[in-house]
Image (cartoon, rainbow, N blue to C red; front, side, top):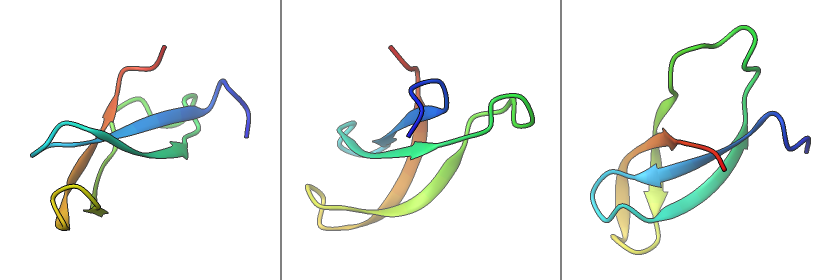
Length: 53
């Protein structure tokens, strides 16, 4: 994975970084928000793209 397109996904409930994903930053300007499983909350929660670096 390229470091330029790498993003962090943070759980909205416990605010821990659980996932890393890629995004084409030239075509998608808004932040990504997905339902993903949080291993700390032990349930599916909303995960939002976090600021990189």
